[in-house]
Length: 485
Length: 95
Image 1 (cartoon, chains in turn orange, blue):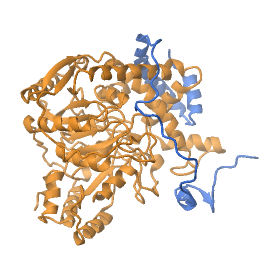
Image 2: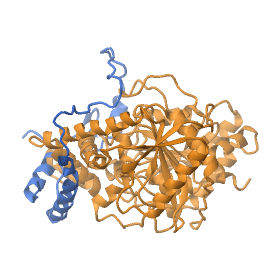
Image 3: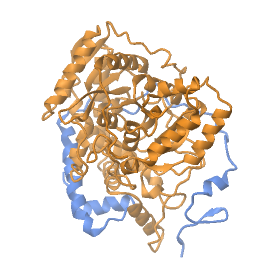
Image 4: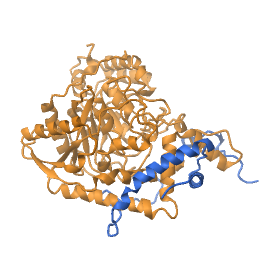
């Protein structure tokens, strides 16, 4: 089977179960693809030997009762993996080898999967183009001059290039959904608290959430089912019964009410995004859903709010990098304070430093009320907008991003223009809601575009069902040519 | 409000990040454009709004105050850039 890596995760699982292919053959096929795709720079670390061992172990004693039986998976390098270097895309963690495993990755391994490698990402997940990584930028398989989105850019690139059958990312302001949209893949940010944050390198703790990135909605439901669940080690983990998203996946969405928020039509948005949105509305309407115009009046304030809350939390989370207990330490400096200052200056990249400074400033004495407290109040208003809307609708349909993938280097000199990429994804994080980005079409340059479905808290199943029905009727095809191998 | 170079150096000191003198100008420009963007929030009157402190409809769990792990000194020290047997080593603090 030469083309096994073109298949979706669910098709691969079937092939393993029916013994059409062994886990070892599958793993070897991905390793070959990865070795041929070095140009994409999607991997920071590969764990091929370990993966081959695990594949052999599976083949010797196959257990096909698990959700991810015998499947190798590469994951974002923000998830701590026991005895495997975990960098968060940063020089400051360049040599960090965790002695523990994140809960989310442990859940994947407990469901029969094993690690194939660690995927590049923006430094500490701060970025929308994977250009802030210490390990260099990642290239979008859609075109050699394009960014793969960020911060989970290694994940989106690897998935779209068939270097992993599925993957996981983290999403603090759009870091799963935006790269999914830029690469024509499916990305899901679950409800805050559904997937444990334990063992994930922290960026902004009230916003961070891990989620699946896959080729299909069915794959997404399998991955979400495997990775989610209550964890006593995360104080904000939601304690509820585990759901079987994949078994309950249904494509009947007749009678569901879909909200269309007028505030998501922004100035200078390309006509193609508008047309894509219209197309999405028509697909859902034809499937028997009812479209309802809604208003989320504080949408335009979501990004400014985010750029107070996220840096504030980041400045406090990243205070731990002191060059003493783990990570990089500068050899310069005559005393402890200078050692700290040089370690952090040499260890962090420009974007991370910018955000730590913003965060430190908005939390500093005399400015806290004007910035941080103000942002927490506006965050309340943004959440209330969604709460009000969800009394009238089951889900909300919007574009995922205001543009398709942009060129490498195009926005690196203007932080605000980079931040504007997350204009449609950030409100969801501020409100803690689940949202799914689906590939929905191509622009005139042939680059993928995505649509986003936003749901009520813990309404994952409904969002997945709508996405499943949408996918069947959208006719989107991944047309990536493998120019890199 | 606008941030001047001195303010930025002060904030960098608070954040324990040394800033290259040559980079202060471009950092000042970037941070001011970000703050200009952030300050759109001042258009909104939020006098009667409660700040959001948690997006979960649950309060933080508490647990019994008892030891749940331990005896992992080796693991804790294993990534230290400089250690001496069972201690982290830092530059001299007391003269």
